[in-house]
Length: 128
Image 1 (cartoon, rainbow, N blue to C red):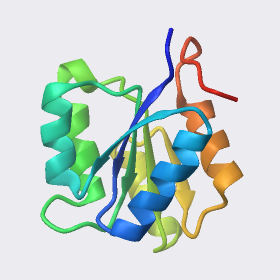
Image 2: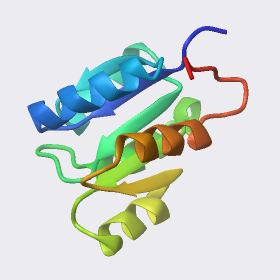
Image 3: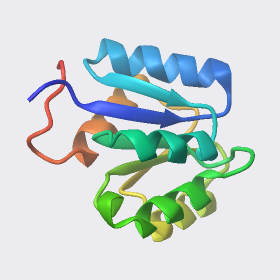
């Protein structure tokens, strides 16, 4: 199996670029979406191994993105890691909605990678 593919949904350009660099250097194939709506469009065309999403985004926020992904039978088991700088209540709502794991911003790169690896199904490989 090749490198695990991660779709990042993050509206902040700098943060999205930073996550891309962190994940790519850890051996993941990375695709970017600028918000939840673009992430849903990307999911129409390809299924990543994991979705990494911010919760606060315009148009379709992270909670709505998680809810809509979980409604799609072909994506019901897709691992989703939700990120937020807005505290435990926000992350708890993501978890209840269907996130596999949550992580608080600002995030530690090693913690981000470990959280993603833990959320991935066993056969997925990465460059570590």
